[in-house]
Image (tube, rainbow, N blue to C red):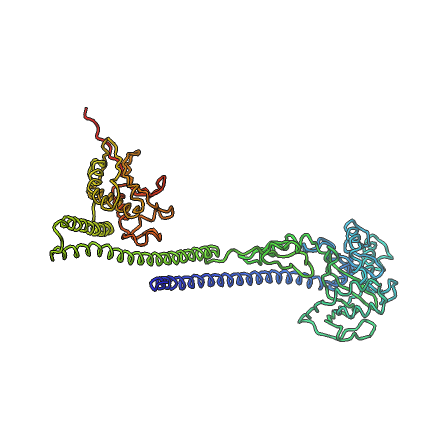
Length: 635
């Protein structure tokens, strides 16, 4: 590789490397920015999901605390409010007997140790259609773990039956009051004597309830429900209450580790309350607790309305707490593959329902596809530039080599006539030429002078055309007549080269074209000179010059029977400084400018020059001139 080519390629690489480095840096910076924005967006979605989950937990915890605060007596149809002292108002309808004040709850129930299902909707089990529906639900197989939580003896025996008898006592008091109003004296007497006990509450953990179950030989299926209470949160003690060491009503003090809170209200029996907790029973969710006294415990709870939980309640909660740019939809937890982020609504209550956050909008800052496209386009441009520079460098080397060969050829072409001219002039000056040889010497001097002049004219003509300083003077004329005159002028030159006279084939009619006579002479003389050089081995075959009109062009053909021009070189022979690389032609004189000048002058006339193979062997060079339309005849 030449030094110039190496410098050119180094320049191209010096430009391409920083450009590609900057482009790659821009791409990597864009990718990093997109990654950071995506991570930030993901963090925002996680925060939005946790905010919604926290709102769900808080709402369900608020419901749990409210239900946890209800006293045991509310789960019966009638009870004696602590603030009512008048005999006529000794009992009141349970606040749970009507429609639940929270739409998420569908019904309340109580499971007694004897297996009886109580509701606040009737005095006795089965006393109303609504009570029957609730009792059927609680008696179903899904509620078996919950039924196993009740324990103790169902036989009334003083304090031991308190958890079983409180509801019955309230109902009996209600009946007595009703009978007394109708005039029943015995009922009125019983109503005057009734004293419903006011209980106090001890909040205990499941450990304490479990201990009482063990003492009372709970049913075998208890173990299946036991884990429900392992993670129960202890309820906080209200600030207005003072803590006392609770007892179980029989004088025994409960271990302190089992006591969560002691809320004394009035003197009377003390019941142990486990905190309300959520429990899933198949597709049903309940809030439940165990209330026990003296070895007997009942299960109280509320059945949640799953349809409302998963429908209007969650929809309203999402509308209230979701961020505008991160609003999820609700989807089944098993169908969240298309979600950008999915989180269960609640791990215990609604684990099979998830918040589904859609895929975030593309981060700002442009499209990655656009960046990749720009980078690929820039890479293509840089690669094309490098290829173009490499080709230019190669072409520069080729031109440099051609110009070097041209200078060498011109020097050789100039040296030959100059040497002849000098030698003949010196011999004439010294009188060394016999008188009979003088015409030959004079003829050689003239011939070499013409040859030298032609070489110089070709070089000057090419330079003028390249610089745009030569303007052809085109005027209409008979091209056939011009060709005949040029061939006649070149006849002696052809004869001196050992060729027979040129075979001339011209049309009988004039061939009118707009041409520059001097340029036409240069074209034909260079074509003949090219044929004389390369057809030297076929002199006997001679040369042929033909002119014919073909369509709207006049075609000039110069034919020889030399070696011909290879097909791959037929177009390139008209390039400047180009010569066909053949061993037999290595020492043939020439500058590589003659045919290049022919094409330039042909194009200056609006035509073209081409090389074709001659049938039968040899070369045929054609020059086409546009014909000039004949003037219209006068009328």
